[in-house]
Length: 223
Image (cartoon, rainbow, N blue to C red; front, side, top):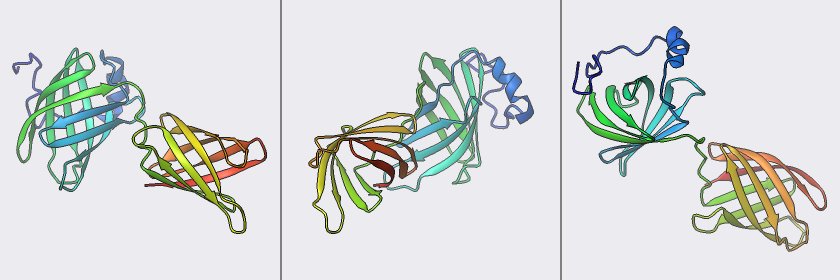
């Protein structure tokens, strides 16, 4: 037993729950593991994204001036106590984490092949929404658009051009639900307001749109 009162969780070599038994194990999970965890480990910030309803997370850590690190996390819970195996670390530094869940917060310690320390996390129970970036380069048939974000808001100033045509400007408002995005185009200089629907995958987005006049497909590159 360790000071958490949870047997064996301080052992780096504690095996994760075998894959074949994960479904049965999840039936005994008393805690809602959420959709993604926002993690702090010293100067490192991590985002752990859950795979469906499993107890496996894909993790990525960043720190200013350092190469990002990725790993696969297997989260095992007993009452409020959590034991997490970090494996397939891109830096080769696999770890074992232990901690206590209190509401949507987790705190604890970790031991790695090299080093260790304290960590904390916030459990988010809504899907992680992709970053909207600063600028979208958009293609809609023969029209090419540049959508520029206003600060950190969900409002963009957009301008489209096409050879031989008068440029079009409009104001766009984006709403997200997970990776899905809905975009309202208003105050169009040509009077042709639209609604865009699509999906963000990494730094790309695509979908369909309908307007007062016409519609079609669209794609975008996010930077």
